[in-house]
Amino acid sequence: MKQEVVFTNQVEEALECLCSTEGYDRCFVLCDSNTYSSVLPRIASSRIAQAEVITISAGDEAKGVDSLLHVWSELSERGATRHSLLVNVGGGMVTDLGGMAAATFKRGIAFVNIPTTLLGAVDAAVGGKTGINFAGLKNEVGVFAHARMVIVSTRFFDTLPREEFLSGYAEML
Ligand SMILES: NC(=O)c1ccc[n+]([C@@H]2O[C@H](COP(=O)([O-])OP(=O)(O)OC[C@H]3O[C@@H](n4cnc5c(N)ncnc54)[C@H](O)[C@@H]3O)[C@@H](O)[C@H]2O)c1
Image 1 (spheres, rainbow, N blue to C red):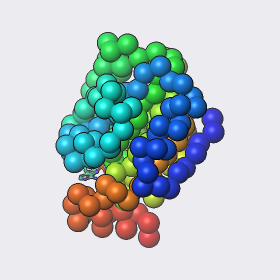
Image 2 (image 1 turned 180 degrees about the vertical axis):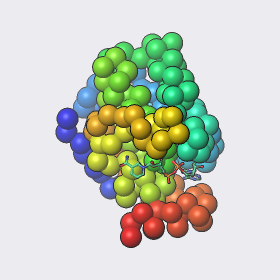
Image 3 (image 1 turned 60 degrees about the vertical axis):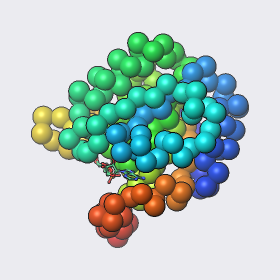
């Protein structure tokens, strides 16, 4: 599947443009507890405002089967279809897990990554590697699946803790 990587601070316009072109029937947003409070309120998009929001705990310990089951259940119970869109708003934990949830739900629905960490923007959100931790092993289960679009913006980095910034720089090196 084609993956567009868009570098812009006009996040809302990029998302709106994609949704208008593709005609998704429903929009779902996946956040962790930090991006839910720090980032989501700052995305001033009617598409996002009307979306069904799914929240998981923050931290890599949340990147496991329980969170994946939660996302699948929420998508199913709230009526996601084969033609729905999942927008992953977060760092690599959210985009890895959300990408896998989208790639497997109904054999694969479209997803967009909006990375909110430096590490996510330079690496995790791009390139099609999704997955979860399992049996004590990092990224033990996953699938290769490209986001339909990755929207890379520096707008949300101002709430990022310093150590997360350093982690992103280390990943770049
Ligand atoms: N798929 C890939 O190619 C790939 C590549 C590298 C790493 N990864 C994965 O990425 C994960 C690490 O990603 P990460 O470093 O982004 O960690 P993360 O997603 O866990 O985010 C780090 C912390 O920052 C918080 N946060 C995120 N954005 C924020 C913001 N804008 N403001 C305030 N807080 C914010 C998160 O809630 C979390 O507490 C690992 O699971 C790793 O396996 C994947």
